[in-house]
Image 1 (cartoon, rainbow, N blue to C red):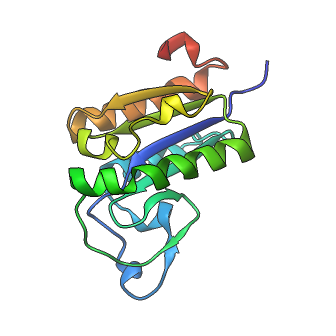
Image 2: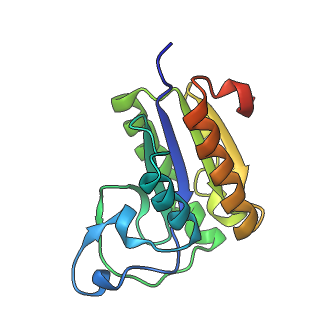
Length: 161
């Protein structure tokens, strides 16, 4: 059985890399908040699979792939902004899913950011798991659990469904 190909989608963060003030850098390197610290630690410890892809919902850019280049910005996601980004976010996830044929999409964000992805399940056949972070500390715990389980199993259905 092959390892599942998974798209993890999280939200951007307020804390950003200092280098971002001088030049564009990849989205995965630009954000320095707690969720991104969990991801960097997982990569250092070898718990980040080559079958795992990262998408980011940004208050400024809408949907980003981890490799997309971004500039410095200071913008907080609001419900209106999330709704404004909704169509672009959904279309970009659909486009990436067509390219990669993900087995699962795991979305872990706060309730305001979730509005930017609302309705995705009606446009895509891929299995989608949506979790509200429930606060930053809880969100970090959920992300750690997800990454640990993903590195140990070949089927996400064992712990996600």
